[in-house]
Image (tube, rainbow, N blue to C red):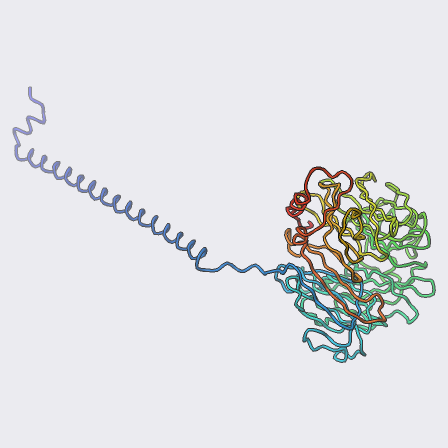
Length: 552
């Protein structure tokens, strides 16, 4: 029996042929579609390959242009050393560093007193309506010592405070406030030297201006911190508040109700309340900034109260907080944080006070602290304090662990009267390099060379506790000095401001910068006892490899 399909094929042979031809045609069309799809995929693959190599070529071309054709911006060249001289001038104990011309290298600000401006700025005292000689404020480049700007500001200057924020949306510090004698307050733009404002001062003729000039939170709502100036007249301390943006006096004079001296401190408690700590006789006194503001303005202000301090002090007058062993000489905040501890340096002892309740954490009995202590790190990330005890050949430098008062390192380092202060710079190993001024004769008993008597700058690092490097010997009278990072993490240098010893005898005033690293190869190695087997050159090499880091 035949299948139905075969039977139908025999009966209708032509119909069967048509079916086959249709099937062949369908197969042919499918084959053509497959061939077209294959050609399309091949074309797409070639396009992707071309696109890949084209993008690769463009990337390589951009890299070539950026690397070899377009020059990289030049890093500003900084000279290893420079010096600026001013003849027939006198100077002040003031130095500040700030990047003024925006070249990423910090610049130097200072004051001098002369008849006319120097360095072809053609500015004279008469241009500002001042009699000659008068005080000039000047800014010189940290890279090469060229004068950026200078201008006459007052017949004389009593106080200076730079880096006061001004309104206008900029977070950059942009002004220097100068309190001039006899009675003026001037704000100068830090970047241009132009006068922002000038106002007559309120202190009377018999009033002595106390340092420092304090910066307090904005009280007049103009977006700029305001200024607090304290004066002493007839054995009474008074306060004046000025607007930081306009210089206008806010309110009137307010008496603190006590006698006091310079060296006071604006302290912020852990609750954010502001109080003035100031030496008074042989005690530490405190006064509420809120109470002083309410007294001078007769209205409430934006200041906070601290319950513990309000219970200890009267809201409108100052009271004794701590009885000191001897006269209070220095008040040093341990950090800039609210509620930070305070180091009180008296004529007979140093006391670390708790920042909230002012209770002693530790006490160090001393004979005489020569100058204001500084801080640094002897052990990694462990804060230490440098105390210079004694004077002349009896001066001893003590490095103390701030938390325990343990003596980490000590050295007898003779100095000349009125020697420059010590400095410290943080290093990459989370310690600090310390810089001390002393006599050149230190450790040179077996040395045959002779040098002129003067101040010598010594460098110390905790990784080499039995070695000092004598970097420089200066015979001129040093009015102010500092060791700073001119460039973040790389360019450490010391800056000197030298001039006549008396303001009544004009002479040569000089501003000098020396890069620390360039002084190390020619430095003198001073060994403190058994310093180990390393040669002098190996020690110098270790100091040359020191890397510095910027403060956080």
